[in-house]
Amino acid sequence: MRSNRIDQTAYSINLNTDTEREILVDSSINSDEVVVDARARTAAGTAANFRLRGGTGIDSTTDASATESDLLTLQSNGLIGTYIPGTNAGSGIVNYAGGAQINFSEFENVEADNIPITVNPLTLSSSSIQEGDTLFLDGDFINIDTRDTHEVLIDWGNGSTPTSINLVLGQRTFNYRHRYLDDNPTGTPSDNYTITVTVTDQDGDSGTIQSAIAVANVAPTITRLALDSTNINENDTVTLTGTFTDPGLQDTHTAIVNWGDDTTSSLPINQNQLSRTFQITHQYQDDNPTGTPFDILPITVTLTDDDTGSAQASTAIRGNNVAPVITSFTSNANFADRAQINKPVNINATFTDIGTLDTHRAFVDWGDGTPTQEVSILQSRGYGTVQGSHIYAKGGAFKVRLILSDDDTGEDEFTRAIIIGTGGGPG
Image (cartoon, rainbow, N blue to C red; front, side, top):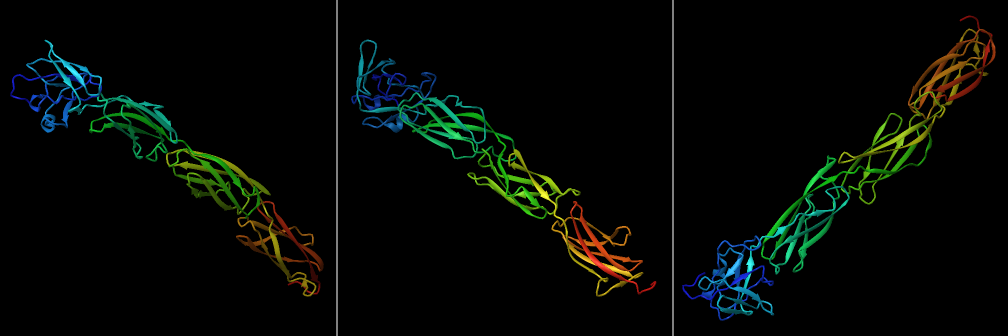
């Protein structure tokens, strides 16, 4: 506000000179003698508003409403005085040409408002990191008002809770660290984030700076793969367990097991960040491929995270074939009930095989010098029946031998003596 008085006492205060960033006006100066100069003048490239605050004789509301300058000027016939800080905080002297002088003491305050804060470019420990790594951030800013206190708010750009730092009076630097747990969103090998730092003083003045950071996914690592047995028989069950690590603590994972017997399984994963494990059981119904008494079967686990990273680990198991077992044998030719020459002699047998995927063949040596005969067989998963028939041309006691084999060199035999009588003629 301006007074209508012509003979105004005036002086000029420069914020860059006043280390307390305040102007304390002597009680002899009346409110109508205080004029805030709104001319376009700058100090250190900074324009600012000034607010007259508190005390008798100064209307802070009026004087604060329309001031934009880096200088607070009290004019006296157009003269601008030179401010000399006093020994006490807020005190001082303004000297004018011709020897005029105004003394300051601690009565009324004038404080700078809307002074822009300049946040300098941030210093990052790296512009590209991997998930799970910690980023170190350092920064500083400029605010010519040394009486201000500040809050620093850091938005890390990845959806995590922003970091708030309250600085003490006079502090103009800050630093913090942040661990990027994942490179969200999922499905990408890397992601770029914008870090935003906002510095705000107690008057609401603020400044902002941004910086970019790239976070790359890291593939998981399978650290252990173990079987509860590495040597089993066909149709046995094995348990596979494993552990893995992933620096991406928020990653989720899927896994597939190839058991080496032309079957695969999805692995249930324990996603606990502190204990990442998996466990699964599998039954080997056969020692494929066929034609071998045992097979070494490779087991491969493929583990994939939600950001295209994957890992593999392998082990092996020995699968042994188990021979079939003939469980019963009957014939219509025995001591109690002899068959006759030129009449059919029938045999029937049953068998089991724990290799439920095995296939079988059966042969009979009738013991009379005729060639070994392949006989019919009916088989299902793990069991079957054998049937054969033969006509003897002469009587006597004969040793009949049944040979049963599976497709992996396993065999079982059964021998039975049969009696052929001579009383019958041609049938």
